[in-house]
Image (cartoon, helix red, strand yellow):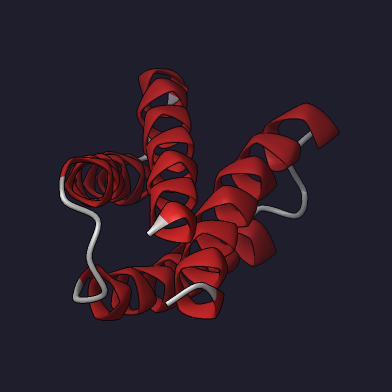
Length: 107
C-alpha cells in the first residue's frame, strides 16, 4: 500500500500544479483541460491517501492515459510558446504520468 500512497501524493502534486496554472490561462479549451484535470487528480490523490487499495489502480491507469493524451496534445500544440510556459505544461504532464506508472508498478 505504500506505493499507492506515493501515487496519491504524485496525483495531488499534479492536480495542484494543474489548478495553479489554470489561473494564468485564457483559452477556454486549455482552461477546461487544466481545471478538469486538477479536479480529477486531486480527488484520486485524496482517495488513494484516505483508503489505499488495489481498486484505485484501474482508476489511476485510466486517468493516467487520459492525462497523457490531453496534456501531451497540449504540449505538442504549444511548442511555439516560451520555454517557461512550455515547461509548466510538461511539469503537469510528467507528474500525472508518473503517478499512473507508480500506481501500476506497485499494485
